[in-house]
Length: 121
Image (cartoon, rainbow, N blue to C red):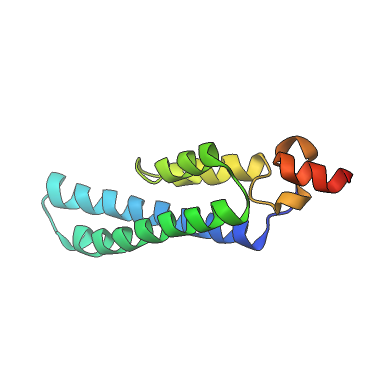
């Protein structure tokens, strides 16, 4: 598995932040709607998660271009921001498949055709 690039690390960090704020919002919703004890968790983590979500979408689009993910990986990464905590699954999948590394560091089977032809010629 190739080493993560700086853009890959940025994506991983933001994915974890997005998941953490999702978890906080879920706890806040439990406290607000189930135990009916406080609305503070929803108030705080609702704002934090909103910002983290927007940041995750922006970083995902930026990293997708920089690391040449293609449309499928980009859409899967973007879709992972909707269900709770699935940005962690996307980060794990992209790291395991080598797509958080620089395109030049990936094995030939994982690189776009343009990169393969420039290496050979």
